[in-house]
Image (tube, rainbow, N blue to C red):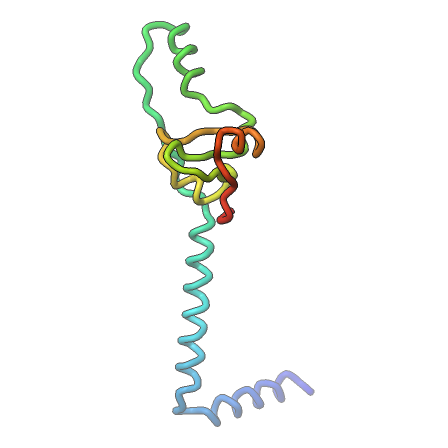
Length: 123
């Protein structure tokens, strides 16, 4: 079977449905699937990173102390809200929706559970 034979079969198949609603239905279904999956991909992408504007320090030592107070530990793996009862992995989309001033950070699940939080089932 040659390429020309395949082309002619495709053309004859398309011509047999000319004027029918089959193409319209197919296009609508493909657009629906495409928009659904694009929406899912956009939900999984990380949002913008919040920026903290700190007051200007009087000297370098005061700046170092201030940055230590506001910095996040480097081994942070879980985050929870001060107002909530669930903890989330830091890369979870639900964790990224928590306001920066309400975040509580944990290094392990054991540490989070000891603080009274339970694991979220969404992530």
